[in-house]
Image (cartoon, rainbow, N blue to C red):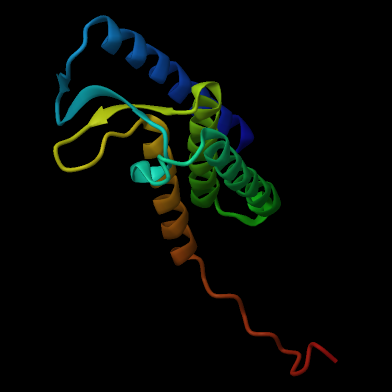
Length: 154
């Protein structure tokens, strides 16, 4: 899972660098099928929430959240089904990529735009798709069997 998360992190960071280089050398949106490539910088978290806060607070909070996701992933990996592990790798990889990007200059580079959703990046897609996969995998798991011990606390 760690290797998958790091591969997703690296992929996102490379694509952010390429998007930034390409979209600053020839400004203006570019159509890419249903998506439009449009360079923006997000100083806040999702949907620019907290954009007015100092960058170090956003970095600290997102760093703590990313560390919590990493700890949860490490702790639950042995018992999590494959789909859940892939979902956790997506969430962790996306969170780590956005944390690294934000740590460099205080903002996250976004470059994918639709007319119906705020501009986002591949790491954001990894986080959302990973969370959905994790929820779907968890919903498919059978409920744990009830304890046969009538009073386990005694």
